[in-house]
Image (cartoon, rainbow, N blue to C red):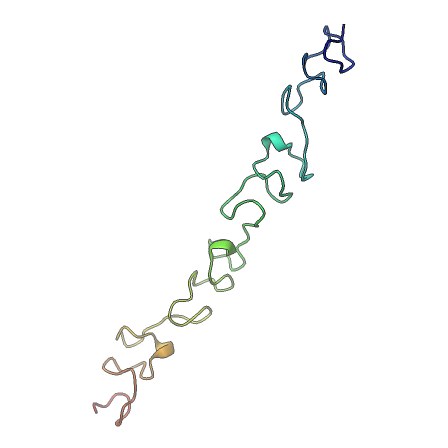
Length: 132
């Protein structure tokens, strides 16, 4: 007798009570084996059932690739400088420019008009390297 109406008699129905299955499948009885994003992983085992590129959220979450364009170990979703392998934040000089401070005066060379004079960041009347 087929009590759940799935076409399989009780003696061979391994999912008695589940009208859509006679065998458990990857999701078990009572749970559909659907794969709505067509990534080859049933939704019951897919933590990103609407993202065909992921089955786990990863660092960036479902729907966002964990791509690391500059190969600095920080995915683009968390990297404010995704094309600068030496920075993940722009700093004072911006992406693609090092925040180097040659004269150790706490002002990066990119905004220090006297990058080799530790006593000045502007040339003043006498110029860099000469006290005003």
